Image (cartoon, rainbow over all chains, first blue to last red; front, top):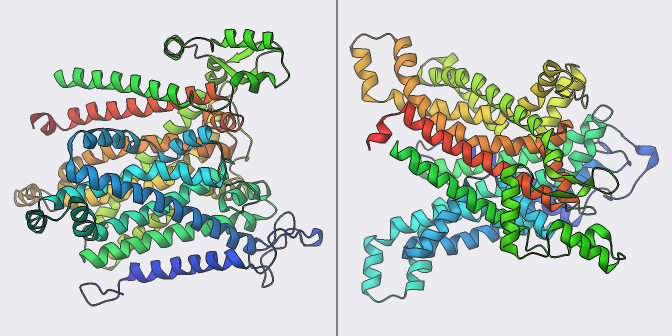
Length: 271
Length: 325
């Protein structure tokens, strides 16, 4: 772990790492094992409040909410990661080509990027979902496409900054191939900037996914999803507030953890 | 003036391109509309008749111009799912007509809340950040934590929290007890206050943070030192000089988040059971009622583009330095 200028530990980085670490750990464990079955219903244990047996209580079917949150967390993290992977790799490719070569491709891609960037991401995702149909794969695809422009922009500006750097000019003189210059000489040098936007992108993907699942057009049952749990829980707000609080606070926890983490990385780099 | 005309032409071009994109997007969807309305057991004659009625047998370019002309005249086609009575399909315009004001008012109330709360909050925050002393330092840090947390709450969960807190615990409003604006306008606005608050809170946090940083940057400028050396009071420097300059980027920022406010209202309508276009959009996506989806997307895009246009113009009016460049 890096230290900040004053030699003190970076508070943001530590807090972010702890929060994110716990969430990711629960998500990974939840993928393989949950304390209770996520589908086992029990008529006698409806709406049991939080206790040591059921950490987050039980829902309207007597299912253990903690187990369901763990499973929902793993779905959310998997979707978030795949969305980031998809949009970041396309973003790197397009950003590298447009930034380094410029020209007509650059012009076209930038116009589209501007148009998409000015538009609320969830709305675009809704349009894509209405064309593609819902389901887990389509949510990943739709969000993946929606978030491409945000990466293109950052990668492009970094490539423009570096394309005339002395070491790149020298590499060109030495006859290094274009692909090698792009992906071996320039790409590793933009990662410090790129990481922060990947983290922000991950957060946006999680927020968009849970929002869409809440609206009923994202992840479909039987896949567990934090957003869907929230919309189920809303009707029981009066009798069982913990049912809504558990998935909701989990989303807040993950998003807050990641934004603290990215803020910590940013501060440890720039002091 | 020249700038204004140039902008206006770009605006019209953009609107045209967006309408073409919206039209094309819903042409490439697999599946036959006629079969999906009539079912698989309709006679070929009935299918042909419906195709004729909907104008589906014409070439795409003709259909685009018929559709776009309809949009301009305020008659953008018929819904596939909603029917007026047994034999007539519901016109989209009628479907949207009484839902649009709900969403627009919701967004407007949210915007007013954002401006009313975030500007004083941002000023207070910048003042505490620029002062030394324990209390000021504590306030600065506390506001940092609160805004960071608020920004991490997704709007729909915030809506649920607001419902729980103000609706169930404090009983300030009845969850789900929507009052229509035709019936009682004051009651309608009163009910909108809480959904609008759910949309506004994260944006208030963002805007206040933005204003704070903007003011802190301005405080380092030369003109601040000049003003002090000429004998201006701290208060006068803060409100007369710094705030006025710091507010300019905030205007652009507000313009940029209006798109998000509109998008946020789509989600929040679902949480509070408001009969606005957001709910219509979601249900139309679920039932694959494409003429309705198409129009709603187009409307929302128009609003967003138009707001960007207004912000561009407004920005030149309040900051003449830009047109000099």
